[in-house]
Amino acid sequence: MTTTRPLLKQDQAAAYLLETWNFEMKVSTLQTKRTSGEGPRYTRNGRTPLYDPDDLDAWVKAQPKYEAVIDEPWSETQKAARANEERKAG
Image (cartoon, rainbow, N blue to C red):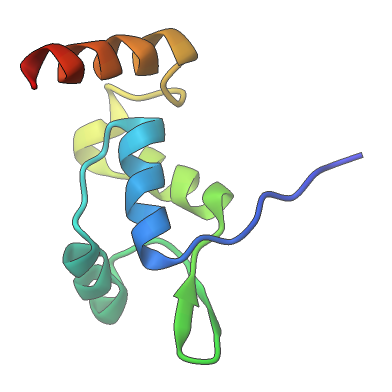
């Protein structure tokens, strides 16, 4: 039995990329890449672009500068360490 994750709006997709892959992308950059055809696959609900987390994962893995670095999403330990560093910084 497979479970499908909910589709993400632009701001949620940008947050997902950062939280899951440490791939920082502003919403405006996501919009530009979508318009140019360079971004992750998406669908629309009316005028709202929606992103499937699986498509975001595949897109990150296909990026040349991350190809050799990222094999899997961040673990919970890595996420906790990053959150701890952010708290200390500020």
